[in-house]
Amino acid sequence: MEILDVDLLAFETGSAEQRRSVVDGVRRSLVTGFVYVEHDLSVDLIDEAYAQLEAFFALPQERKDTYVVPGSNGQSGYTGLLVETAAVADVPDWKEMLTDGATLTRAIHYPAMEQAPGEQHVWAGEHADINLITALPRATAAGLQLKTPDGEWSDVAPPEGSAIINTGLMLERLSNGVIPSGIHRVVSGAGQQGDRYSVVQFAHPTPWTILAPMPSTVTAEHPLRYSAIAASDALDKVLYEINLVEDGRRVDADD
Image (cartoon, rainbow, N blue to C red; front, side, top):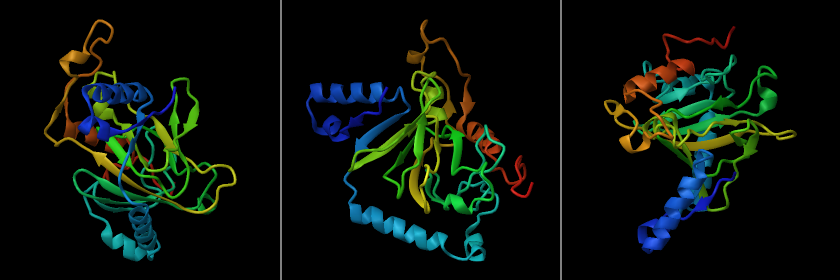
């Protein structure tokens, strides 16, 4: 099982045969929950974005706290360290975030692990994204890993000039599980030092969209697995599970 590198431009401008090849490549790759796609973002643009993010996250804590958006449950503005917690974890992630927009563009700072408050912390614990699909260019350091069906962890390392696309829980629901969500984590490798920065785009449906398996995905081979739910309700459920609901935090960093 491997993540495939797919040229989406061939789907837009290629022949019928090329388009079928792209669709086949995406379908085969998404068994992993991930696919690599080529992009035309310049190296300079990506480097400049990370330089600006590094400058923001280096601000004094009291300055960063002025960008907290009360009541947003981590979906807008600044979210500090040791808040978001993977649903399967009992300790919060060692990261801080800056988020903008309804279709979330999120900048994430993973501080050097030697600064973490305990050995039990990782940059981001095992999880699946809430949304439909997630897109991200290369980060400033390695660390992203996907979980294979046999429970092993495999590094996600896109070729130069490619971005990472991974699937989320909402797409899994719409496809009745035919397209699984990509289970992943972010960890610092042995001997890895320094901070890590990443920019992530989370594609969400409108809050009132009803998420239900498409009829074509419900077959004898794939019986109905999911009931219908509004996108807003599906989001709220996961936000509570990952400790982002401000009035319902299940994990306290001070515990």
